Length: 390
Image 1 (cartoon, helix red, strand yellow):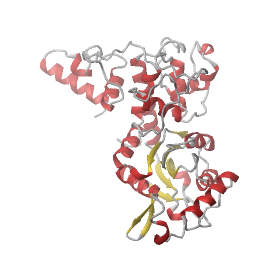
Image 2 (cartoon, one colour; image 1 turned 180 degrees about the vertical axis):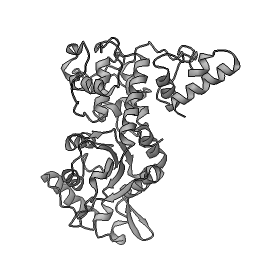
Image 3 (spheres, rainbow, N blue to C red; image 1 turned 90 degrees about the vertical axis):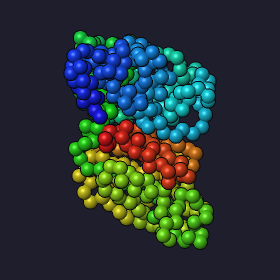
Image 4 (tube, rainbow, N blue to C red; image 1 turned 135 degrees about the vertical axis):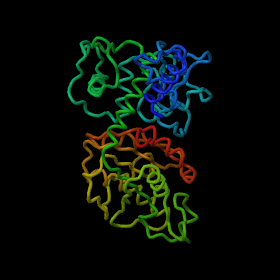
């Protein structure tokens, strides 16, 4: 149920009973239903993005630490799997927010300080929130400058982000002042994250969705006697080779609809697993994208591109590079979904942002190869939080 509808329902029930009951309207005793952030708090609570405290309060005016903000974004992204241990000395593997910090760092959304620390307990400022949400969106070019009276006080690293935030109405500004160095409150975080995801949902609701996928399985002359036992990335279904990327593409299509498109190379890779990886490794080293035999004929019809691929040596496979080079992505929304055997997203999120100028590249999801068959719920949650479907 949408937050606005939920609040209206609770208010109607309270009026019908003859009394006001703000706790029922928002779920928190310190969040009045007429507060500017009430709908955002309900949204964050319903989505499991932000919870309250034991006494039934939300703490709308309290500051948010960098670790807490990483956890908010991590939950909003669907709590994807994270591999490896934290590289920050002030974030231990047993900390409740360790996975969130590791994910935010790996995705390039939140970095540490020059001394190597993450600053787990440091309050996150409003300009930091703007910069982080801007990175979540793929660091898009801002259309014009923000009309904030104190924009000159914004630090250099956050200027473009604040311009983008202002142009898209993601963060509020009292008396036209952005207050870049003020600590962000829980109410402001709830509202900003909700506005960000609502904006993404609005952008993605008008056009068609393309589910483009690349898999080794459909780019080799498959011999089940040679390949089936040497690669977990190939599944033998009814005697046919089906790659993990194809399985994920089918899951995505079942959830959101859209058109599937297989990225296929003109020249097949060798049938043997090791021979294939040797050729692919040579392509990666030489940065030599191969030619493709398939092409999207109605590219301009698609506003959203869900790109599915394996993470090879921490990067995008060269055939995917060819695909990115053949089309213009300006104005499109790109969602990366990759399979891996321990690398997570690797550097592919940044590669996509660099290769798709003018596009909005949303935070991707990494699924370990051996977990693909049971990943449908995780994939649906990721798509839902990206605003692709209700």
